[in-house]
Every structure is written in structure tokens, then in C-alpha cells.
Length: 280
Image 1: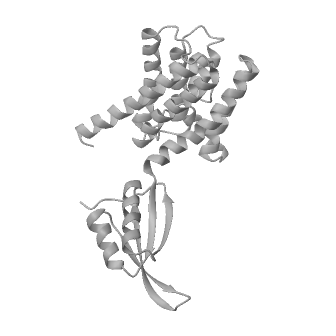
Image 2: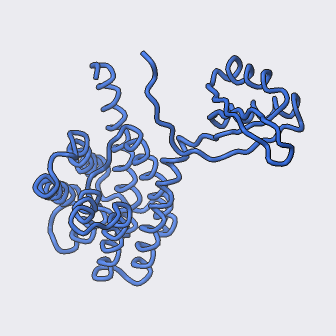
Image 3: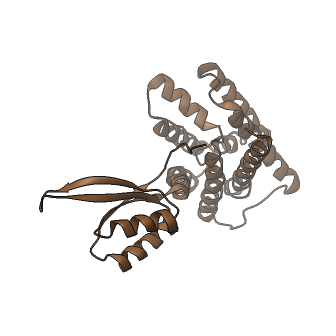
């Protein structure tokens, strides 16, 4: 990777972990909710250990990294180590700049929603750069390796365990909000991750095949594949145009089809990810 690309990569990763740390410090900590994460576990342990949230988070993350390297190997990579260490660093920075930060909303439920939104944005940026915040992801991978539990389910189980532990330090309302927040965090994170990459696979059968193909290639600057299909009703061979477009291109294509061939047969599928190697 070139130096400029490496700098850009880590700048975005740093920005993503900064946002996640802000969500933890300004919304999770003041609310007292132990939403399933290492930060949530640190919040619980702070009731028994005379250390700051950032210090406990650092100890937990370092311990989890060691467990990961021992039981799984070095597949985590430099990025996971970097994010695992930078999260408590940013938390410590916030503790110095904004000591004794209280709730900005004065409502635990709203704090939970704000935390979920802010942290999900930060984590989505990390996933876009092929990184993660470490933490419970490491425990999930260990469980996945030794107990053959699906990774997503393993991480969710770890998160729920943390949320349930809050019963020892919180009231019933906080415990319920912690469990609800843990459940919602997975749903929201999926939305942010896949929402950024959402594309549509459009399949078109039309008498105006050449015009449509030309529009896709020259106006949308997108690719297309031609399949030969055989209609069972009329026993005729037809050509089907298949293209992958983003939201903006999809709107342009639909408008073009409405003007060019109102009788075109069109099917549309949601596509979460497209992998390809560009020609050099």
C-alpha cells in the first residue's frame, strides 16, 4: 500500500474510533447503561474497581488481544490492535477535557438511542476500512473457533452476557434498556454497513435493447451483461440486459425506461456488496 493510501486509511480509522469513543463517553457512561461491549463491561467493573473507565477499557482490550493471539493467532492484524488501544486513549482524553460529564439529555432512553447512532456511525467507518473495534469481537471469534457457533451469534451472545451482568449494579429499568440497546445495536450496525454499499441488480427485457444498453454504458458509465433467455409462453428467444447500479443510477435508469419502453419487463434485486478486480 502506498504511503498516502496508508495515511488516508489510518486517518479514517482514527476518525471512526474517535466517533465511537465520543458515543461511549458522552452517552453510554452518563446513562449508566451496560450495552453489550467492552466499554459496557468497563462501566460495570468501575463500580468495583477504583479506576477510570478508560483505564479499565485499556486493561480489558489488552487482555482480549492477548487471548486472541494465544487462541486464534495473528489474523486480527495491526488495525485491530490499533483500534483496541486507541479507544481507551480517546476515552482518557475526554476524561481530561470533560471531567465528570453528565447526561446531556437527562433521559437514559434517549442517551441509549444517541449512543447507538453515534457508535454505529463510527463502527461503520471502521468496517469500511476493513477494521473493527476489537473487544467482544475477539471473544466471539474464540467461541466461533472452539464451539462452532456462528460469529454473529457468538458476538451477540457476548453482548447479551455483558448486558445481563448489569443486574448487579443497576436497577430494573437500566437492565432492560441495556438488553434492548444491545439487541438494537446489531440491527443498526447492519443498516449502516450494508446501507452504504446497497446497490440494485436490474434485469431488463425490452424491444429497445440497443437503446437501453447504450444508455447504461454511455450515460450511466456502468457495465452490463447480456443473457439469452427463451420465453416459455411465446417460444421466442429474447435478450435480457443485467446491470448493477447505485441509488442515483437506478433512478436515472427507471426514468429512461419509462420514456423509452413502458412495456419493458423489469425485475430488481437488492445487492449488498459487489466484489470485483478492476483491470490494470
